[in-house]
Amino acid sequence: MNKFQPVDFQDLDDLFAFLPSSELEILQVLRQLIYECIPEVKEKLSYNVPFFRAKKTICFIWPGSVPWGGTFEGVQFGFAKGHLLLNDDGYLDSGKRKYVRTKTFRSTKEIDFDRLRALLYEASMIDSEG
Figure 1 (tube, rainbow, N blue to C red):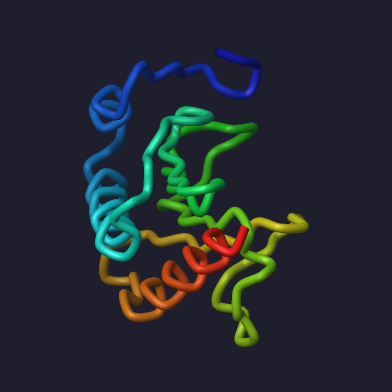
Figure 2 (cartoon, rainbow, N blue to C red):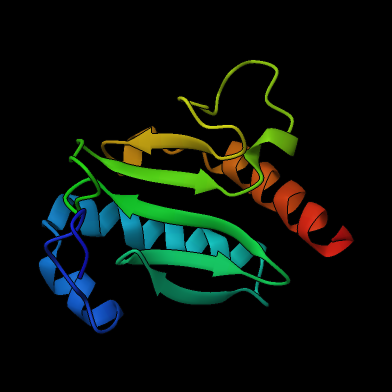
């Protein structure tokens, strides 16, 4: 544990048991989409949330109830090298970050599957190019 996180999950099952059902549903749908688009991806808990990598970290899913200097509503889907993705319309949010880009979902109905698929394929290509 560290000062930013009063929780310390041993594995994904610990995380799943901790989450409210609304966040768990979004997280599971997003995980399924990641595996559909990038089957070779490896999943690892980091900062108590799932991070997905092939050569390097590609993306992560951050439920709002998992604290990191505060909480937010919904589930954040983030791209580690989001600054390299096509995002002319501002679909992904940069916040105050230099590289990471995110999109927050408050329900599964808000998920634009085609858009996320395209971003996942693009992020995977960027990762494979090193």
